[in-house]
Length: 55
Image (cartoon, rainbow, N blue to C red; front, side, top):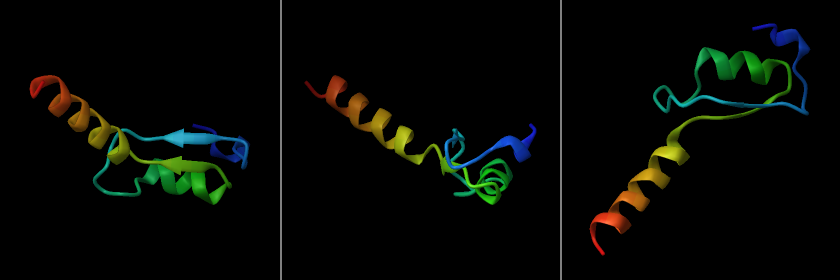
C-alpha cells in the first residue's frame, strides 16, 4: 500500500484486534490517518449474538 498518500482525511480499519496496533495501523498513523482495530466489531457481534440467542 502506498502509505505516503495517506492523510488525516483517511480511516484505516484492521479486523485484527491482537495485537492492538498492527503494522498496517502503525504505518497509517505515521502519515496521519485515523486507525481502528477489530475489537469494537468483535464486541458488537458478541452482543448481537447474545441478544439473538437469548430472546
